[in-house]
Length: 291
Picture 1 (cartoon, rainbow, N blue to C red):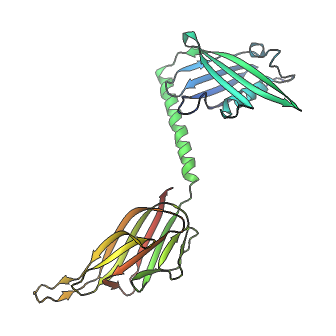
Picture 2: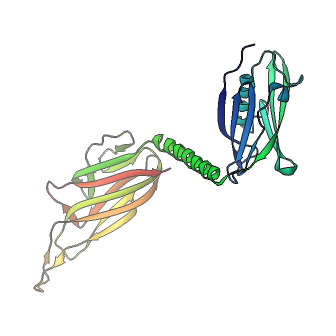
Picture 3: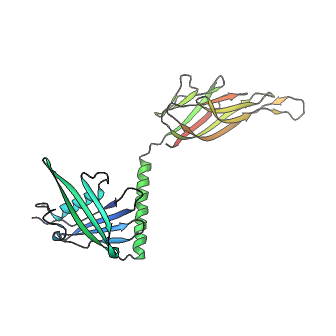
């Protein structure tokens, strides 16, 4: 029978449903001998089986004919990696013993034609003295793994962003230029931006406008489905000579908010008591920041 190549496999496992303790494991194969190392990721306590020959864990009840030591390592890893709910294929159990020891039980269900066979392996894990530098190294590895996990989440998230421009007004509503986006579209009159992807959005609106010279105030309203989200008041100022005449000058209004949006919700801007400035656009920026 050919000898196995030295290997080392590792991973993270649990022995109960969350929020149970998670364990880091390493299974090492060296010179045909297997060592199983386990670490409590919270307390940083460590245990190991010590290097075992096949005679130490293989019996007539669980032997695989012609299996190499690396084949058994693959079986042990499968038991530690499988879902706790997948009890029909593999199981694992960790039991505390006296003296700080642990008993690790691993079992597999082997199917052949119409029959099934359960095979089990038992290991006694001895506690290992842990130095302070080992604890720091383990914590650093935990942080690196968490960083990789978060990096993977970020890279897999679609960036949903829109910057819309309005250069004309349709009655009292801002009319938007055509959008180059698969996540947003315009209504038939181009006066509302339709959100095609639900989520939590950050919205920023900049309206350049010229208030109507009148004693009546105006407003700029950011709307969702024609309901007010935010409001900015506008108006002309009285002249400095007390003649009750009103002067008006070009200005702008800025509104910012976060809003929960469902699919096909419409964002629009309604303006009263003010007017557009020729050749001066207004802008709406929308960015999805959460589900």
